[in-house]
Image 1: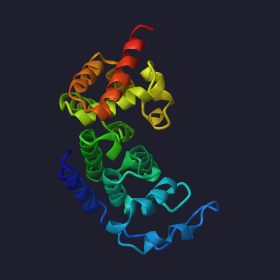
Image 2: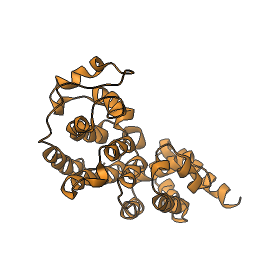
Image 3: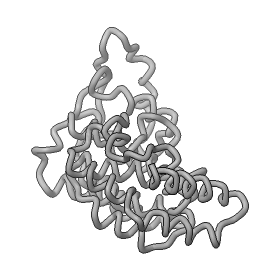
Image 4: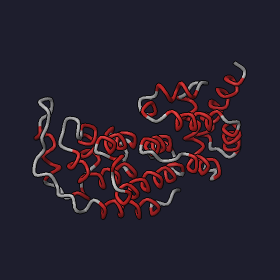
Length: 244
C-alpha cells in the first residue's frame, strides 16, 4: 500500500503556505445559489471540514459561490480530502486545478505554487499504489499536474517502473474507458480536453506504447481473481486495436 506520509509532508507545507488567508466572513453567491447552503463551512474549523461539506462547495467555488480568495482559504483541506476521501465532484483533482487557474495560478509566486504542485505529484504516486476501488486514479491526478503546467514524463516513468499491481489495474481500467485513438479520446474527455496539446500527446503516446500491453501482461500473471478480468479485457482491446 502507498505511504500516506509521502502526501502528509507537502500537505502540511500547503497548510503553512496559505495559513495567512483569513476565512470568509460570508459568501457572496449568484442568484442561482443559496448562501445558507454553505454556512456550515464558516462555523467549522478548517481541518475538520468533511468531504461532503467541501465537495459541494468545491464544485461551485469562484464561479457561483464565493471568491478566489475564499477558495484559497479552503484549498489545504480540499487537497487533503481529495487525497484521502475523493467522494465528491468538487474534490476531483482536475476540478481543483481548474479552480486554481481561475484563481490566478499562472501569475502566482513560485513559493506558493511549489507546495501545491508537490501535493499533486505525491498524490499521483500514492494513487498508483491504491486499488481503484479505494482511491482516486493516477489519471485524474496527472490531468491536474498537466493543467497546472507540470511535466508528465517523470510520473509516467514512475508508473511503468514501480510495477505496482494496483497501478496496473488503474491502467487497465483507463484502457477500457478509452478508444484505440487515444489522442481523440483525450481531446474529447471532459477534463483532459483542457490540457495543452503537447501534454495530451505525451499521455496518448504513453498509453499507445508497446510497453502498455507488456505492463498489463506482467500484472496479469500475478493478479488476483478479482482483477484478472480487468487485465484480460484491456489486453483484448489493445490487441484488437493493433490490427485495425
